[in-house]
Amino acid sequence: MKLLTANFISCAVKACKSSSLSFPLHFKDAELASKSVPYNPLLLSNLLPRLDWPALVTSSKELGFTLPDTKPELPRLSATAAAAATTTSDGDMNMDSGVGEEDEKTLRMLHKVLMETEVVEGKMSKNNL
Image (cartoon, rainbow, N blue to C red; front, side):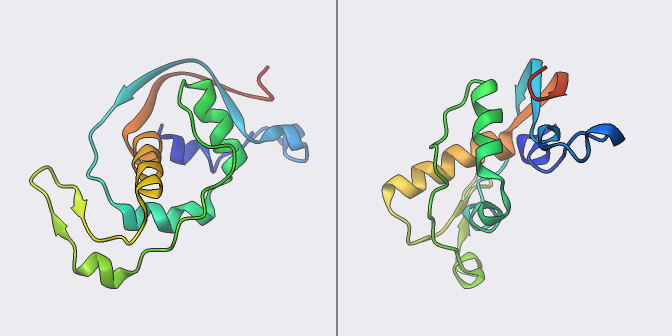
């Protein structure tokens, strides 16, 4: 399961649906794998507003990643910029995103955490029980 997916799921047990403890679910004894996925800053900039940032930071910390405590204010990239982009030999999207160096660094880290990291083994529990 990708961390991106984990950011959208909550406890499915009927008794905990009304509880604030049903989200986010916490990883226990997680085994991670890394799978190379082409870098796509347009996708990331469109996903960012939909993410529950505090939940993502919590899940990331539990798995050994460090994200900023506050959600980055990155500009939304346009489809026009994506259409003008080129693709590198490894499939990464190379585009003039118009973001600064720090924002680019953040986008690359988000790509690694959300798109390339998979939990292949482990458990998920509510409220870190």
